[in-house]
Amino acid sequence: MPSLDALFEAAKAIQDKAYAPYSRFKVGAAIATPDGRVFTGCNVENAAYPVGSCAEAGAISAMVAAGESRITQIVVMGEGEALVTPCGGCRQRIREFAAPDTPIHIAGPEGIRKSFTLDELLPFSFGPDNLAAR
Ligand code: THU
Picture 1 (cartoon, helix red, strand yellow):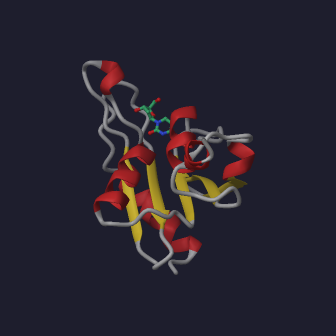
Picture 2 (cartoon, protein in one colour):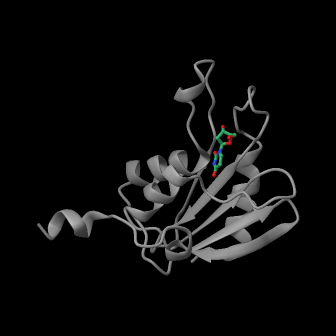
């Protein structure tokens, strides 16, 4: 298992790679998987603004491309003093691959600021079970 410290450092390193010339708001995300691997992503913006993608989406794509489909914890690193929690769409993206008690750690450059469970950020969520229950 990667330590939380290692996951934090991975999120910090990938944040620096973000392509965010429009918002100038760089975000990095690092995902840990059950076998101890770490997958990272950064936000990638576009001149056609709505086409940009979030850091969490990039990290999830890397994880899935590597054949993994379970998230054990995730660190999201944003800019500024406020908590940069995943946007609504990314909460749903994480939900597809995480359990209700999966920790989502919100970080700033100085360290982890606050930790939530997925269920705290996305209560009463819709997921694969809903489709299976038909
Ligand atoms: N952003 C993320 O990458 N993840 C989040 O959790 C919040 C927002 C990005 C999207 C956009 O490129 C920039 O931050 C400003 O919204």
